[in-house]
Image 1 (cartoon, helix red, strand yellow):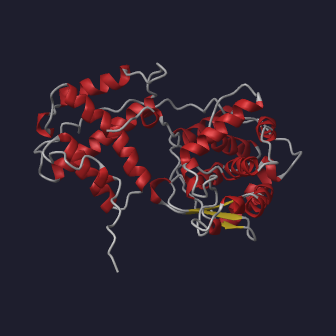
Image 2 (cartoon, rainbow, N blue to C red):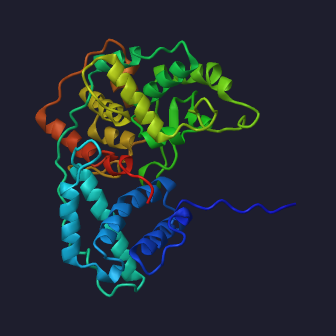
Image 3 (tube, rainbow, N blue to C red):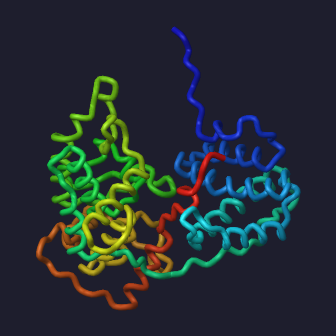
Length: 363
C-alpha cells in the first residue's frame, strides 16, 4: 500500500520559501501556531488576509524584519488603513481597520513571547472606535417575504436557494455557520439545529421554525439528490452546489444579495442582513434581549450586567412565540429607543466586514 502525502494546511501553503527571520516568515509561523492552537481554518484565513496588507506595506517601505518595526511606523500604517480605498473606491470600514490592527497587535505579542522581540511596538496602538449604531439594512417582515417570493423554487437551484434564505432568516446563523451545516445537524423532530464551530470555535444549539424545516425537508428529498454522484454520494454537507460539494460562504452571500436586489425592495445586503433582521423582529415581537444573545451565539452583552444561561427548550418556546415566520399574521410592535440601543450593542460586535478579504489577491 502506497502512503499518500498528507494534505498541507492553509498556513503551510503560505510563503513556504520565505525567510523565517523576515516579517512574512513570522506571519507564516504565526498562522501555523494558530492551527496548532485549534483555531478554525476560517480564522486562520482571516488572519492571513488582514496581515498580508501589513507585509506588503512594510515591503514597499523596505521594512523587512520585525525588529525594524517601531510604534511610529505602526501609527503610519494605521493612517494608511484610514486613507486606503478598495477597488470600488470606497474607504475601509472602521471595523475592517480595527480588525487589521488587532491582528498586527496579536502577531507582535506572539513575537515578543517567542523572544524574537524584546519589546512590543504594537502594545500601545489605539484601535479606532466602531460606531454603536443599529444596522440600517434591517428588513421588515413584509420585505423578507418579498425577498422569499423573488425565488423561483420550481428548479433545484431555486429550491435550494429558498431553503437557504428560510434557514438564515429562521435561525439568524452566520453565512459560514450555514456553509458548515451537515445533514445530521438538523433535528427535524425537535425543531433544533446544531451549529458546529461557530464564531470563536464554539458549538451551540438553536431553534429553527416549522416553515424553515418544511423547506429543508423538501430540498433534501427533491433537489439535493440530483446533484450527488458516485464520487460524492457520501458528502455530509446540507447545502451543496451543482457539483455535489459543500457550498462555500461567499456563494451564500452572493445568492442572498441577488435575491434582495431582485425583490425590488430598494435595499442592498447579504446573509448578515437576515441575521440582523431576525434579531430585530424577534425583539419587536417581545423576545428578551438575552434570548437574542443566545440565538446569535454571543458570549456577553455589553449593556447587560446579569448573564443568564437560557435552556434550548425555553429558547425554542420564545422563538415560536416571537419569530414572524412561526406565527403568520401576528403584528409586531415598535422598539423604544433604549431597547434599540441595547440591540445595537448586541449586533454591532457581530458585524462581519469582508472589506479586506474581498479585495485580497494572492499574498
